[in-house]
Image 1 (cartoon, rainbow, N blue to C red):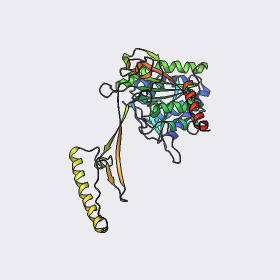
Image 2 (cartoon, helix red, strand yellow; image 1 turned 90 degrees about the horizontal axis):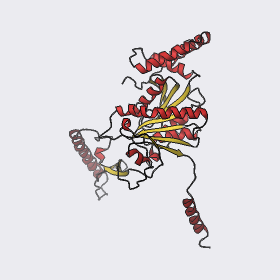
Image 3 (cartoon, helix red, strand yellow; image 1 turned 180 degrees about the horizontal axis):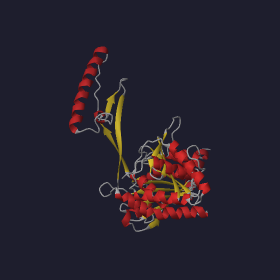
Image 4 (cartoon, rainbow, N blue to C red; image 1 turned 120 degrees about the horizontal axis):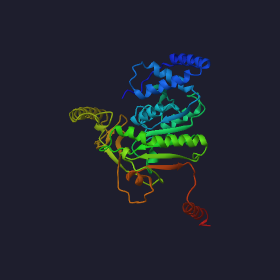
Length: 392
């Protein structure tokens, strides 16, 4: 794969080149078409040996090409993820869109809809062939909010925001944790149509090439969405969550589904202080053992010094697994969260996770509407009435 994210600041040459192309296009109408065809050939072929400055030049030209529709791409896993890279490559190769990318610089796939406040985020140009791309030191919601604010890109707003392709399902209650869903939801909040796309990745079965297949199967839906948006008939009150099965090329077709109550079981595990990521968590067993022995030696020395300095203290504290004493004698405990798949009893074939397990591409409309079902509304009303007036 030749497409990578590289911190590069080549904007001045690109800007000069873009101004030259604009001036030439005003003198002759055929230059733009030739440039577009050449750009498409370069992005599809992947054999170009031109230096990275050519990409920046193309990016600058695309951003100011008003004849093309603007599509914004973000994700939850970070700008280097294969799902995003393959999706952007496919969109660029169509030659129909100005593709812009604003994505987290690191994995934020379970950040939910969190946003960054009271802190400054950094935005760095990134290199993805044929697209104008930035990596952001924030969450997916930050990326979309910033991109649509007008502070980063010159356009007012894109025609469509696509968040994905994520590695792992966002079905059911996982939607609340999902950073990829949050990217699409933030776009909807800002009034821009959006799609969230996830691949039901399974560690024992999935391969990197599955992301290319996932792009291929969802491109028709993306193009259909863009056509309907242009016609003004795309749903305005929801975004579409698209869940692609583990074997994308063997899918049974698209299926309109409902959001389920499905979720994996959370499993919190205590982690030894000596296995905390800042210490030996990612080291070999031998390194970990050596570090633990060294830590025990330091702890023993510190304990001896503490006893000498604090002669009035008679009780001896013993560290437990998953705990460590800080300088202030407060005990720190370490835990690690993992999700464990569990069987679901709900057999409704129209639920998102059930359709996904059955090999369908599940398409679930997700709304911002605060409407509550009538029975829940009635139950809440009865509770409030009883709580406020029951004792009078």
